[in-house]
Amino acid sequence: MSEKIVRVGVGCWIQNSSGQFLFGHRLSKHGTGTWAPPGGHLEYGETPEQCASRETLEETGIIIKPNDFKIIGITNDIFPDKHYITIHCVVKLNYTPQPTIKEPDKCSEWVWLDRKKLPENLFLPAQNFLKQKTF
Image (cartoon, rainbow, N blue to C red; front, side):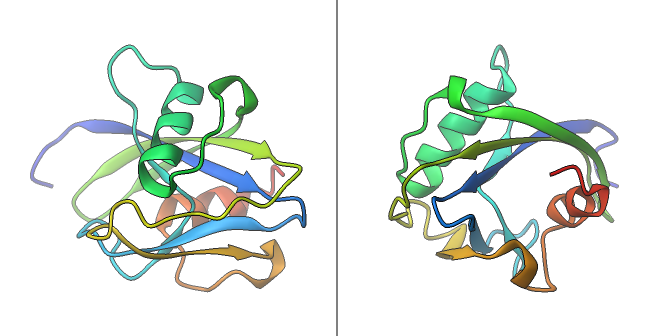
């Protein structure tokens, strides 16, 4: 481990009107080649719901109000060189927005996926969260 600090991440589980969840194919060095819902680092002074709203907009262009997100779980995610506590938030939409790739250096595509048909190569926080079976 290069830095012995624990970071706080936020995962944004966005469910569309068909019950599918939004997943992106990661390109960034951290988790490259894996699939994950939108998410990122909690910034100083931010609530997890504000972070979920901001990260969703920054990564996908989809506008969701912070008050629409609900915290549904926490995971302890230990990578070979990093340690995160990830706060997972969910929002259930009554429509299916069209995501846009806003950070092409970090994500190659966004797709809506059925929860029972997710790829095996999920980002570690998503894997750990789904093992909890909390939603």
